[in-house]
Length: 113
Length: 114
Image (cartoon, rainbow over all chains, first blue to last red; front, side):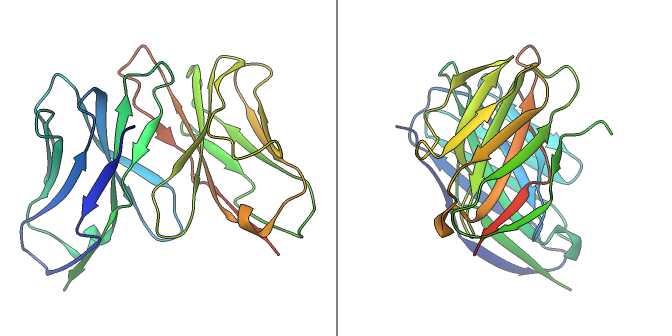
């Protein structure tokens, strides 16, 4: 059974720093891996999707990597801004026919001005 | 709009009552998912539709929960005899299996059972 873990649960850094959020998964047989952002009381915004055949995806200041062999994905945020403060969740999509997402509990990120 | 919409955004009900939560997916997306998210946790899978049929309902917690998608577009999640433990944010997502199956989420419905 797939399990997804995110460490740390919370992170606070000064504005301008580069940072890395970690996501690990136990079953390497994934279809893809998605990173989401969730603001308090809001829904989920998809940030990046990495197909199982890919190793990384980039969007603006965000870069996500995928290493299936080690069961790890990282989300790199460059030059952090206070507006990046949110909870970041990763989710692995299984190879099962239903393609359901298995989620980590998220990392709550606070960027201090 | 072009995104997934959910109504109502908030629902407060009393224990034992019946509620319906609605999801309107992105036009053309054949796959539709319901998830439930409790405070401080990641979402939890409930049910998956491909077209009109529930392809996988293994995440529904018990028989008080039921969902339909009669015309392959709008879906309704129905909860009978609500309990306080049902309080959560209910999220709906849709995807196009022919385009990498990326799931797009609605804003959610916050259900509070008093």
